[in-house]
Image (cartoon, rainbow, N blue to C red; front, top):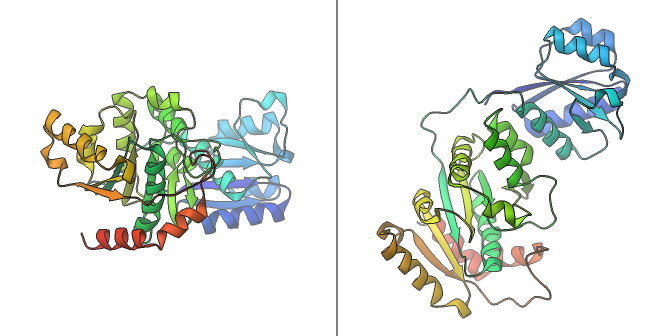
Length: 334
């Protein structure tokens, strides 16, 4: 995917400078940013841009319309503190005083609407590692969080979950927003993917769907669109994919995985092997047997549910436990 060129036109030059430098440091060659503090310098530069981010002092309807008509940019967005003029409500807005991560996400979100997916890396390989534990949502999420950290030690990893919620608090956007974008069939899927991605340590992840109805509403076409976007993503060479209980066509798509982990606790001792065995016989998927690895998880006593609020200290504790060392050694030695 080609680099996105951004111009920041903001009267408060120190803010604009820090924002542009922060974007450059954070996004490297993916997003280039320059800034101007006055209209004259900006117009004199005649610099090509994919997106112009306008501070409040430059949010005049005639000026914006002239920019769009001149073709000097593909898109204009408003950098606003809190409010914008009613006559400008048709333009996208990025709030000025929020985190750098949120601003960058907003930039990608706006840019995605106008770009096309015109670059694909032919022959690009993607390593897919699956997690399947429909018998216990909590164990599935716990194991996936643990395994994602282990894999991210050596790989450019993306963690995608079709379970309901992970990594704690509800995000502004999640996997459901990406699916909605892909359904529309317009714009740049990779740029939109970047706008939704979040980071936890070394792990990049797509926030899981907060509304379970969104999972049940996914069709076979939705899953295929999602897989296409993941395979074409140039920023990650491996995906940890947590198959949820409501996944349509789950057994067919398990074929994509180089390995499938089935975590369980002692109370489910016989269930996982029996369920996978039934799948192999019913769907004639004998090849899955060689990919599946059953992982017995330790019993963990917690106050309250695990689903709503993730305990980072618990994952960190398991990361360097006997289980973490075993998983790390098994993966490296496979």
